[in-house]
Length: 87
Image (tube, helix red, strand yellow):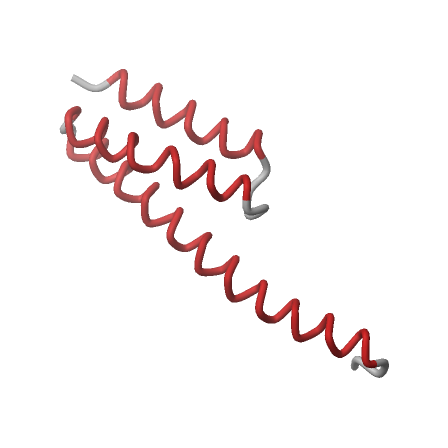
């Protein structure tokens, strides 16, 4: 348990950051899920549009510190390859 004023403040800050990061991660996963569903349905146009919408969200997650840059790049690359292979 936090004892010093500084550690109490850090605990409060960590709680707030956790909530923000959790919401941001959830939002990104929703975008990724929409791409996955479009790929599964076989609709190349919808998959391309979903991927186009998901890319900036993923990279925003990188700048906000939710994902590592290489993780986001890998996810985008794999999804793009799967979308390209459709149709």
